[in-house]
Image (cartoon, rainbow, N blue to C red; front, top):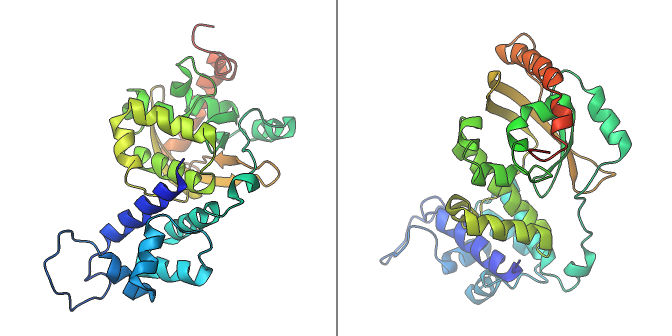
Amino acid sequence: MDNRMAVREFLASRRAKITPEMAGLTFVHGRRRVPGLRREEVAMLAGVSVDYYTKLERGNLAGTSESVLDAIARALKLDDSEREHLYNLARAAGPSARTRQRPLQSGTVRPTLQFMLDSITTSPAIIGNHYMDIVAANQLGYALYSEMYRGSTRPANHSRFIFLDPTARDFYPDWELAANTNVALLRTQSGRNPFDKRLADLVGELSKRSEDFRKRWAAHNVRRHHAGIKVFRHPVVGELELAYESMELAMDPGFSLIIYPAIPGSPSDERLRLLASWAATERIQDLAGAPQGA
């Protein structure tokens, strides 16, 4: 991925979101072609010269100090995810960034991780990677995402399912939220690893095949994704409202454990019990390991 272009488009997109009023610029003169801030206004708010900020927005972040990055983040009112993304882009602009990056985990998990997953029996649990693959799951995890295993491609991939499979719009009652979140996570990862060819190939494939993806990718939104509530519409048991907790696995860079508990005694808790019975009957864990028709 072109890091300079990513920097340029990210800063320009954040600048376009901040109006002079939001930035506290009450005395603004002259006709404005766009509602967002001008480069000179961002430079003034950040305490740098216009020429210097223009150089940064053109993608030249290499060597930029933390104090300048912080000043730009404040001027553009970046949230925590956006601030982290800006720092990642700056690190990736360094001369040794390409050699510093380690390849991400993408394939199978260690046996002890699968044992851990299988010991979680009352909640869906999966291990995913930064390419949005499901690389391992417990029985309930496979059952929850059974719709993703109807295709022939393995490993099952959240991004391809959301943007290329029409059934995703039924599976996610709020498909717009699922789509926006998915792209924001991919965009966040692209800032951490801009030279990752597999990630670039995935983004290229989705951009070519999905206008919905292209539009969201161009927005340059980023997001952290550690905890919250997700709602699914499972074709067997109906609507499931589940909490989620995501934890990066320190010993396995690039892998995250995600657990989806239901509130005890809730309708979703009862439906998870039904889902577990269905999964055992259908041997969903075995079926998930093979392409459709195998």
